[in-house]
Length: 138
Length: 138
Image 1 (cartoon, one colour):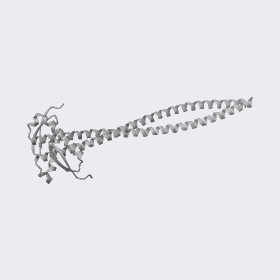
Image 2 (image 1 turned 90 degrees about the horizontal axis):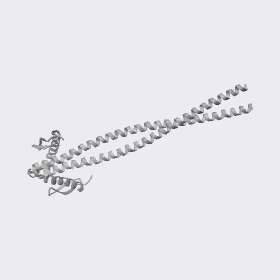
Image 3 (image 1 turned 60 degrees about the vertical axis):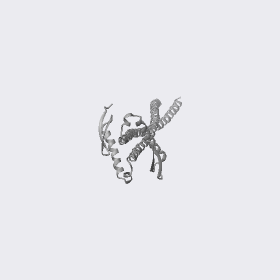
Image 4 (image 1 turned 90 degrees about the vertical axis):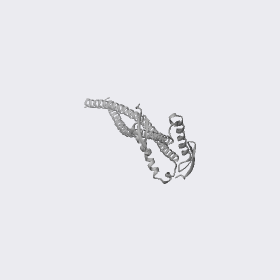
């Protein structure tokens, strides 16, 4: 595992030291995400009227909403994934079936060629016999 | 779209009225998620020592962390999805190639059967000719 880090972040214009296993980069990303939300809220008139507790609750709900929306996204993509897995299964099945048919067709071709070869020999034999008969007759 | 709702939720033992388009069920799920986090925090000694601002920041970071972890999950599943889409593309390509080969093999079989049929007719003709020659000789 990574080692424990002390990382300074600035959230809502105040400095906080966070202690944990996460990387500096990751925690700065989290801080910046929260700061962007704060800036968005501050642009709205109703927000200025709220007390600090209500502001916190609003922020928590807002972040939690992002979280649940992405969780829903996970559910959808996982479903897509399952459908794709099923399609792969079906395609592989079809592929096996086609490969079997092709192999049987190749065997049939080989057998037919063999039969054709035998027939051709027989034709030559018959034609030779016929030729010599004619010669005998002539 | 859904209509605007006023929904009462209880977060950290206080009642809040939320106004928005989300369903009651969804907002209760969000509230319950935040309350569970609060309960977990309250079990830890260090948390009791924090002022309310620090508690809020900690909660915000904690929820944001859940959010970023699920976003990472989305990234991974999307990558899996892309790999599966590529596999489907390749399998379909292989399927088309096999179908073409099978169709060619079937044409070859038909042509060989036709040739065999012609040869068999020729053999019968030759055998008939030979038979009648023998009869003539006999």
